[in-house]
Length: 464
Ligand code: PLP
Image 1 (cartoon, rainbow, N blue to C red):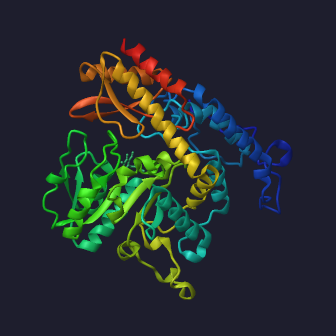
Image 2: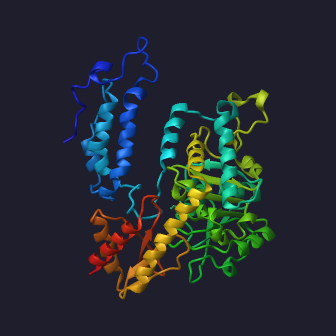
Image 3: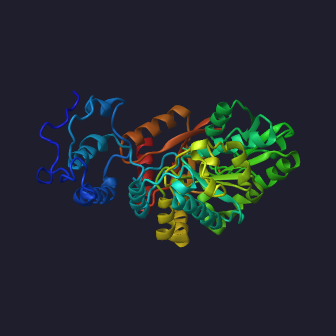
């Protein structure tokens, strides 16, 4: 049965738990923040403390959460207390926990505490840089912070970065700019590229050609074919299924020779370039036209934060700039407006959380986090390799291990199902070489060796 709004919650006043009355009908500024902010922060802090004890994968059936929510909007204002209570009572049971230390599925994402606070500040400022003057700080911080990250990852000085909601949008932007620049309609990627390339090509009415991969699941440059009619090659550094690294240094000269745009999707693995020992994977990326890295995958920044750099940002502007009369500001005609460089007009102040992450974690903190993830994945890989009856299914470059139980696909499907149903851990799968494969990625900043060991023990127990 659907819940009702609590009848006892009245139009609020400070004495019955709601915000105090303000000036006439206007709310008193800061009153709700002062009254409920501490409770909300306490909720967030205690959530992070207890998340390890919650079932990783939400143990609910489709529709179960919706059925518990009121069918109609509230007539009268409720207090924030009631919202906080219902987050616990109604929403938490339907939450799959991405902050959980044993969430090893897909590419896990953790948000660090400074970035959580910065999200609140961004919402407070509610800055909307539809053009420079409506958000000078938001516009300029985005560019400066992406310059910092470019330096951290070893990207060329002088590239300009901007933040999109996700890698799918970043790739859409790159493909659109490539088509506009080249006047061509063909996209080339490996057969292991993310489905966002297929989707962007479909949205733009472009034709996608897929290149076969080698035994390590990386694009085969000898099979790229003729690029003279190709608008853009999308190379992936860290594919979704296995984190394979396409040989960008070999692909780049082919693109240059044919005037083809080179876009690099490093959504996951790009963050690892903060550590010099992983820079081999960015060999040749300096010759690309555009590169994307998701800070919300492996840079401790909450979703959404996909960083997109272009070596010639004017090519993005040529594809996207469209300024209606009401947005013309003759006094700032030359000022940067990021809305001229992508599909969105308004944008969130996303750089604030990234700025907070970089300032409070620093290069050394990011390096330590990435290295810990990779070290723990290495441990897990060793246990699998040493255990009879198990096999590794792809080379491990970063913090993803692809593995399976020896036997048929159904055995592995059942294994995935049973470990995930335990609520103790969450792993996902891929199909590699036509075989069903389990994927375990260490990505949470809270994962310890004990968590990885517990996952391995559970896998062995369920497999037995
Ligand atoms: N590219 C790669 C390599 C990915 O692994 C993913 C998602 O995991 C994406 C793109 C799409 O990311 P988003 O959800 O940010 O659009």
